[in-house]
Image (tube, rainbow, N blue to C red; front, side, top):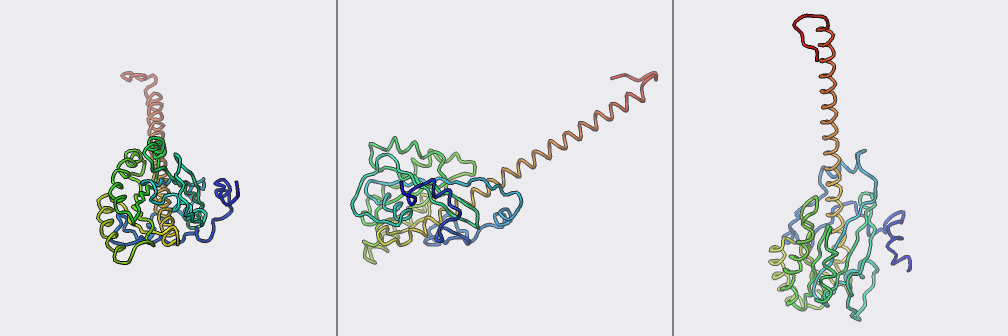
Amino acid sequence: MSQRRSATFKMLRTEAPLERQIDFFPRPFKRDTTPYPVHDFTKLFKEYITSKYLVNGLKISKTIVLGDVGVGKTCLVNRFCHQVYDRNYKATIGVDFEVERFDIFQIPFNMQIWDTAGQERFKSIASSYYRGAHSVVVVFDMSKIITLSHCGQWMHDALQWTNQLAYGRPHCFLVGTKMDLLSPSAYERVIQIASKEAHRFQAELWAVSSQTGENVNELFNRIAALAFQANVCMERNVIASSVSIGNIQKDKGVTESIKLSDASNMKKKCSGSRGCFTF
């Protein structure tokens, strides 16, 4: 396997490629078509990543890519991961797996991308890989509007497996591919329809072109930033809980020590005296 395609090589790189280095919060495709209206990393996030408590272990998120057969899932993933576009359609069998390395505020972050098959006969196999996903990307073909009508079922199936995350619901994205095939008027009409669907799914809408590469890097950088912030905030909450529990245990130990000390003193005072009970 070449270094370019090796997941292990990407994870062990000393730093991410320049286009994968993020020092500011990536913008959404449209501000009125996202349920995540944040313009910057949160104050708590910034304070925590500069604190001594940040755990420097391997940080990984899982992104699953779903959608009908032929909507362009594999082309989207290949454009992002390998900067290639293949016109010859090859159906995904089961699940394909990629890893991309990011540096977010100079902190290494790896995104697993699971490209699932859209064929019905592989659906039961692919769905077993949904569990534990931090981001759900449901893809439709903007030149075939019928594929948009199936996105609700794909989203529903994915959330059945992923809604048990410690930090809550995964980040959801509704992505229209092949935007380069539409005329300006058709594009605007599809965006209007897709915006309503994205609002209904509580998902962030994107339009991309795997052939030209338009909006592809921006989409995945946005996914990485949201997932990384959620990862760090969850880590912070776990550490805060541990510190809190530790303080409780410490206080409990001090209290028990005081009680034992008091009992010991009481024994000394009562020793040899009438009317005192010896414990």
